[in-house]
Length: 282
Ligand code: AMP
Ligand code: FE
Ligand code: FE
Ligand code: ZN
Image 1: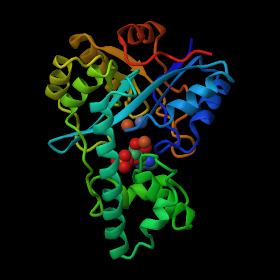
Image 2 (image 1 turned 180 degrees about the horizontal axis):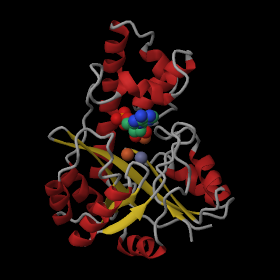
Image 3 (image 1 turned 45 degrees about the horizontal axis):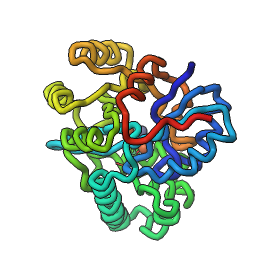
């Protein structure tokens, strides 16, 4: 069984439509794929529909951008109820704030002479999708200013850039509680990713664990072998599940489907704990 529990589609900042992510997962030889778009469940319906045409199971999920004292934490929520009012409202609030935030970032970039307008960015975001910094990068690629998304993050889009603007994001402990309340299973995505602003304080992981956090994503390309060993020890100490994933974004990132995977027993435990929505099987 090959299980990849973290991917993105055009419902957020991936480059392939949800149904195409499912098709690509089947083609990559995966048995199970989770679709975990940023702050939205928009891709669940088309991805679920595609499962019938491919030999791969779908774990509907989300990746919630959270913030605490300047730290950016991404929380994966598996199998949440898509109709949970409070979770839905929180995600909608974040998505609205993301639009305003991108407008401000583009204003700052344009004022500094970078040839970009918000209309050009908007043209890169599919209807109702979660807008993110990668869409600014896509607009610059579309214009021929840069050749690939990565290049825009070097000087312009990173969290230490003068153009960077924050968006509304829930507190990570509140987000853990919300995912649980929605019948889902909360797992911290790439907890020790070096590209995040500052390193995640262990105290915060402990606080999230006390609130009911279920697991840590240990297998991720942003973690080197030493970081993975440290994260696995931390998970064992706190009684947390250990997952692995690709964090696939289509052609938007170099990450390849199935490059890190999750053990079947861990998926079984996630499924056993969830009450929000079922795994979709072919
Ligand atoms: P945002 O959600 O607007 O804060 O943007 C964060 C997203 O940007 C992440 O989910 C990644 O998909 C993407 N990202 C971050 N760093 C890079 C990078 N160096 N190259 C390409 N994409 C990146
Ligand atoms: Fe992303
Ligand atoms: Fe992430
Ligand atoms: Zn992700």
